[in-house]
Length: 332
Ligand code: GRG
Ligand code: ZN
Image 1 (tube, protein in one colour):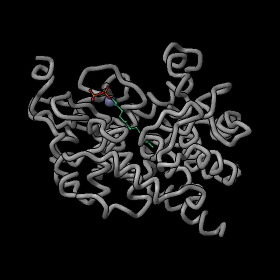
Image 2 (cartoon, rainbow, N blue to C red):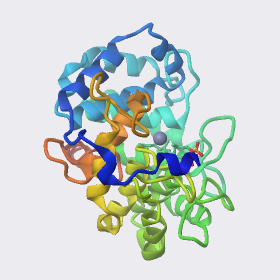
Image 3 (spheres, protein in one colour):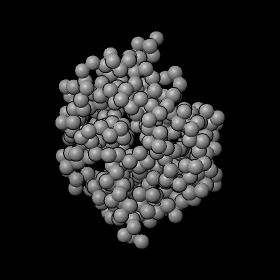
């Protein structure tokens, strides 16, 4: 019933037809500056990623300069541990998730030079296991999310040689299912979030030919519901963040046209908060920076006017990825 109630056809979606750029910028800036607010305290345990989502969204919206660059860079560097890894916030243990977010923030600000790339890559390499998988941290949880974090991080730092890329690929392929989808570990159910991590690893490794791209993209295209939005797995509700997790894969594999992109754009636009700014998971829910970034990122993939272009593999603006490539080439 909940599913049916939330299903609406794109024609029912009403007037939220245009992207409210200034409102979203203001929403993100207000959130970033509201230190001490309840929302801030509740998101402290993933603050590093929250800052990456906020800055990446601001960049796409053409407003990266609205936050204090030097203060953020100093804060990011203060979260690095002697082992080379980064925590989610000050005094938080290092983890691959936040190490990638820290590298992405420094890439957005063109400050990768502030890092000792070898030390960060050594931290990442220390988390790879014999079977090619990566643990997220010293506690040992394994998930293709951490494989993605590891390979993306090393690639951005120009240090792919620090890890065993072929073995990382073999592990990710073992997470593939008969339906063309990928799960978090071998034998786990296919999920759209895991698709981004798996296809991303294969793309960075140059191993996307190991995929049955037609079958995988069939699974991805089946994620579109009559609302225009995409879901994370069969029979589940559509959610704006899957506009990123699924659509990025379709774009990585050259099949963006396998879904109705106009209907998806209308769905995302309808999830905007017209008063406060920000984007929510579904129409009329509470907005947050996570869904604001992934909504804007999805629209950027679809070439929405007024947005900078995003790279589907690195989840960073195309300009930034190109600059990082030039920086790495100049280092060798
Ligand atoms: C650089 C963008 C970027 C990411 C880094 C952390 C990571 C790598 C990827 C996360 C991939 C992932 C698993 C995303 C899914 C997140 C999500 C919305 C999970 C919700 O799962 P359920 O089961 O929701 O609560 P459903 O929609 O299936 O009911
Ligand atoms: Zn979501």
